[in-house]
Image (tube, rainbow, N blue to C red; front, side):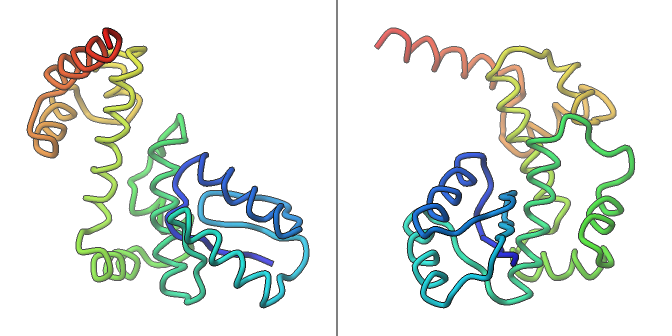
Length: 186
């Protein structure tokens, strides 16, 4: 049996879901972002308890197909940008369409209608968050980050970063270091 869970976007969320399943005595074969594969069917009582327990963590058990499809789109993008080292060489629309099994135009229209932004802007926002993380880790320079996230150049990365955040990656790096030093001195 497969369950779909909204707002499940991190490893911490996966751990929380695993804990809740264990509390209810539900055996799972796999827990991925937004998707849980159970070994046995879940009872209505267990489903209700799981729904309530997940809600306390900001997670939501999904039932309708539209919500499930939207969550699949988000999870494919989040996993792609945040948890995959090798972004696809193809364009994102082909990748998402192939991964989910629906025409991209349909997915794009559905996503925009429901979320108020298009898939491309959702991807850009997550790429910017990933860039922030990589800057904070201080393991890669901007050229390496640009290459890792498949930007055509550091200039393209920088202009997109500034457009979304209002500051350049270099200024973000400086602000981040100042914040870190302030925290160290506390």
